[in-house]
Image (cartoon, rainbow, N blue to C red; front, side, top):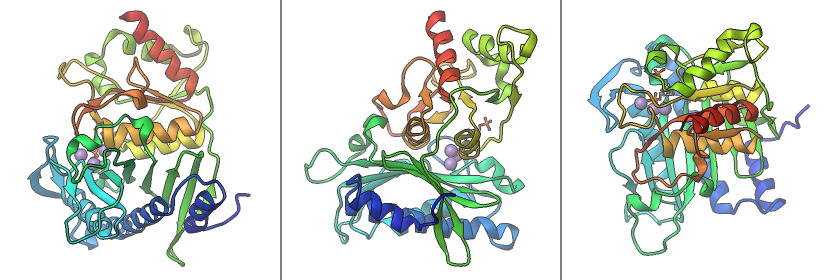
Length: 336
Ligand code: AHG
Ligand code: MN
Ligand code: MN
Ligand code: MN
């Protein structure tokens, strides 16, 4: 049974005993966790709060923003801008970075987030989440720009997500494995319920949006075709499929029981490497998956080794059980 300690105690242990994180990072993570509790309150109101439906505006991704996309974004900005831990923030829902106003002290960290992941599930009461990533501001020159955020994922100081599902759970890594916390609503705090999470190296469960099958490249046709051929085919085993359309829920399932998640390049928009965003979706999820013994590539290269060239850069994603990710990656490299 995992010892039932609070997020604060876990973080203080990481700070004091493991020397893994400085106090500033601990305090930043606690602010993000408090902001996620605020978002959970709005999520749980549903139709009883003015949080469903679209906001009528479009974000830099070209997506129609949901009211909750904007609410969650504002909660994270307001909770984090005054604490003194950050120099700036970047979000799926904001065109440019948000530099901490001069009236507040500037910190050494950069916070990136997808404030509401799985927006297409909001109005149909399917689990959604918030994804966050923490980088250090490496150049000490005064001021901050979008270029400060263009760091490979392997330089993240911390990453995690909050899953607004049957339980509200915070899943976190500070580079010392993956820990999971469940929100105890009676005391209003996140309580440790899993630590040292491990992703099984093999799986019989894949996650992909099959409706895009006709648009995929040959290696994806080969891999998924073999999964669908099942026990009579070259894999010699049957596969199950799951696709929730909230990355946080598919990744959470994989952290809990294994699996492989894929959002590959497809020919609908050949210039786009994939749908998912590198800085605040693929990188934080890759950090968690790798810290739990899984793997994460763009089909050819380790995602966390990629150096971004722009804030909202997209990337193809193949992540989860190590042996399956390696197989899909091998198929892509053989095909090139
Ligand atoms: P977001 O709601 O933050 O825009 O992200 C949605 C992403 C991801 O959460 C999910 O895995 C994927 O989009 C689903 O895409 P499809 O709707 O094309 O299946
Ligand atoms: Mn998302
Ligand atoms: Mn989003
Ligand atoms: Mn979106």
